[in-house]
Length: 151
Image 1 (tube, rainbow, N blue to C red):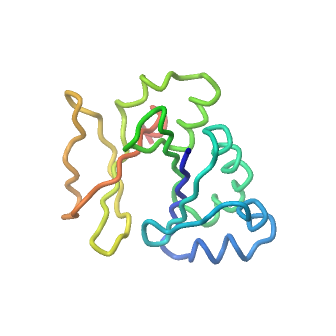
Image 2: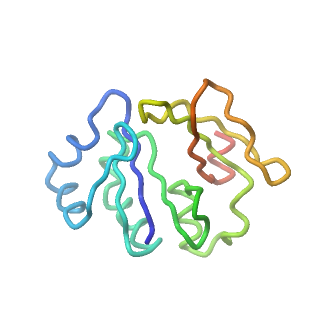
C-alpha cells in the first residue's frame, strides 16, 4: 500500500480544516486517517497513482492549510518518503525510481512527535547526512526533485 502524509501548517488544525469542508471531507471519506506526527494526517491508498490523484483532488486545501504532502511508495523505498512532485514524476514515467535517492529533505522529529525545520541535503557516499538544525531523537527523510532542492 502507498502511504500519504499531509503536513499541516503551524497555525492551522489540518484535520479540522480538511474535514470541515465538504469537498475535502468527501475525498477523504473512504480513508482511515491517522495522525503519526503532530498536525499531520496519514492514510493509505492502493497505488502511487491513487496517491497522486488524491493529492491533486485536495490541492486547493493543501495550498492553504498544509506545508507539505509526501508519499511513501514501497516499490521505491520502505523507509523514505517522496515529495509530491517526485511521486508525480515517477507515476508519469519522467524519472526512474532508482534515480531518486540523491536529493533529500530531512525533517527533525521531536520527542513530542512534531516535524520540525526541514533541511535540504544531498546523500553522500550512500548515507544521509546528519540532521543538525536542532537536537531531535529521529528524522524523516523525503526524496525531492532537483527543482525542489534548489528552491
